[in-house]
Length: 126
Figure 1 (tube, rainbow, N blue to C red):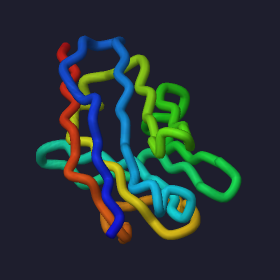
Figure 2: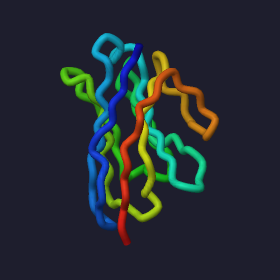
Figure 3: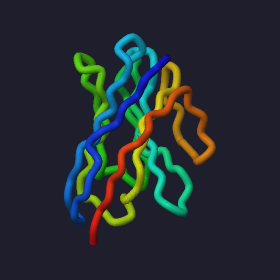
């Protein structure tokens, strides 16, 4: 079974930065694309970033493009989401998820993933 564990959430001010981490089961890290989702209270789940294990190509949704960057560290079996220039609307629970082999954007609220982490909370204060 694939295990995904997020960390790095917290409270930041508008314009600040955070880096989220997603540690992935070593045996499956190279076989799954990792997707970052977020869900704010009262809003639909949104898939915002993805990184493919095949070529390292990345995807970022328009809502975060230019501010967030997804990356991976193979030696640590970890995927990161660097979040800069944070806005109040970025406040949400952030989840990493795994889908087999490759990214398949765009990711709507009904996107089906193979595995999910439990989430980490990001709060951006105004």
